[in-house]
Image (cartoon, rainbow, N blue to C red; front, side):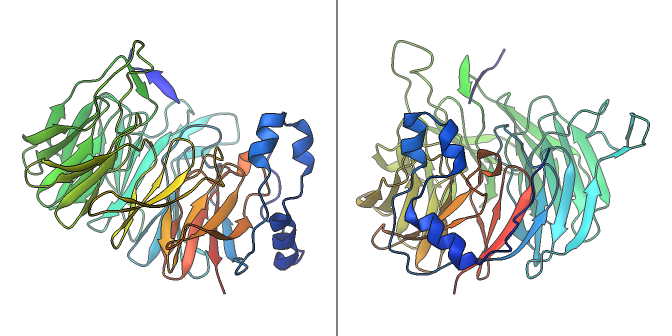
Length: 418
């Protein structure tokens, strides 16, 4: 998780009744894989039985490649232009129909010629190495792909045709963001870039400070309201003028403290949320803040720490903290409304709101439905087969009445509820 600055099994074999599978899941029974776990892990893996209010169903699932394996990744699907845009870490970009899961178009950025040699057809692949796609976004009728190799690629959203490519120093570990014809790309080297979305011309760059020890991840930028909004590994929230890259303001959210570099980590590795003239952000070391967009003035602060994205739904903020405790707060004043610790240490994803619930995924491939008003867990579904290789690593995406979840081994699934 930290860094310094210096044989696939069957996919969703569901020949048995979903209802039967759900009843086994909800009973809290042990699995064969439990035999190989130590007592501490067993305690985490054993789910307490719940009184399920409904049984979710898998409408369709699609294997899109090799997923992200065991690597840290923020790569997640994007819903835009009535399509689901997704990718695996190794270089496969796939666009799916949300109703059926059928492939609209697909780009594989390397071709194996059958003789043990990789034929490079893009800067994405060098000497057969993984593309290491770190983030994907869709805007301006284009798909923007950023890689850990320092590549930024624009594809036509309708056809997948490559429109332009650029190379930058530093890893792209989060999705780019575009607005007003400018694509904003953040890098692990602490440098923020602005590109023309149509031509790929670099318009500006802004260099920030990077501490000796940081988390393996970066804040996803947000291009909105004429600014590029991003968190930093030094615990600051900043806004750059979108067209020029000039720093408009920066505000200290979290201050380093402690005797060791590990204790002094204050990274803001989440994507800021802009809502009604206020920016909401959270740092790893324990600061949740609401900040005025125009001035950078801090409106309120609370002590919560996370590297998962915040979720705002109406007047509620949903926080999944570093230990996978889930909280609901009033976004207007930061007052805690409820907490849910029944999924502690299960490496939960950020929360996705749908109807009266929020949905989180976990390290063993389960989705959990939590009631927005009470914080009660009201349903769950075993999507990944209780296997860490099938973990749900990124927050689900909501498409109409469907929940789109992606597993570490490259399966995208659409789930519905009765």
